[in-house]
Each structure stands twice: as C-alpha cells, then as structure tokens.
Length: 161
Image 1 (cartoon, rainbow, N blue to C red):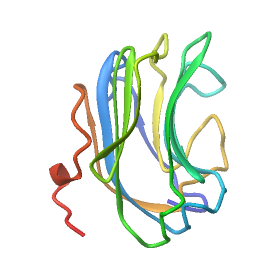
Image 2 (cartoon, one colour):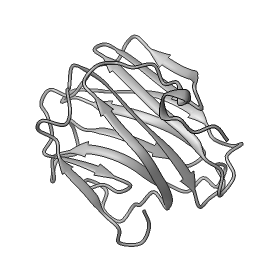
Image 3 (cartoon, rainbow, N blue to C red):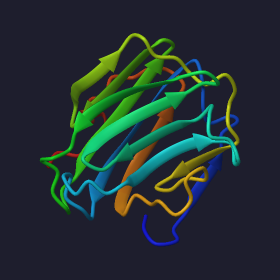
C-alpha cells in the first residue's frame, strides 16, 4: 500500500463496535524510527473527525478510538522495526478494554477505553478517508477482523520468521 493505493470495505457486517479484534502481518518499507506518519487501518465516516478507529505507525504503533467526546489509545515504540522485516500486529477491544500486541506479545493495554458511538461507513486498509494522502507504505498480509476479542498471538497466522 503506497502512492495512490486504496483498499476499502463496507464497515456494516464487517466490524463490531462493542468487541472484536483486528490482526495482520505488515512488512514496512520504512524503518520504525523514521517518525513519518503511516496509516495502516481506519474505520471512519467521510467528513467526520470523531467517532473513528485508527491504527497508525511512525515511531510509535498506535491504536486509537474516538467517540463523540474523547479519545482512547494504546501505543508501543517501533524503533526496532527495519524496512523489509515482517511484524504481526493485533489489537483487541471489548468496551472499555483495549489491548495492542506486536509479534505475539502484549505491549500495551488500557481499561479506560471506549468505542465510537456509532459505526462508520468504511474500513480502509493501508490508507484512510479522514486523513487522505496518508498511506501505509507497507505490504499488509493475512488481515483478519473478528467480532470477538482474540489474543494477538502471531502463531495464529502461521508465519514463523
């Protein structure tokens, strides 16, 4: 996902606001400490800055959720990521719990979270609608969205390198 690439799906029927998990493998074309903004995933409604879900990287791997009044996040430093190396990323949510996994390890969690008040229209992989122009600049593989919280164990995807 780079340049003008865009992969989107309807959010309805593919996303559960109250609980679930998102996991995938990512091979960035950038080093994790580059401090540039890389948008990996977004659930949003075009034209709205609140009530969205975003997973982004750029020095930090950050899973953010906003409702109409506040935002919540879990984060982890990606300074050891190297261009061309694969990493498994997983996030789980079960209102009000959020958890972030990197390469099968829990790296941050938050029991003060929340979820958007309403479901957005679009799921964007490797790009986003609310911040157009930002791309993952990475290969994303074996993406799985579940309507139940699953542990972020990279063994579940079958890659071992």
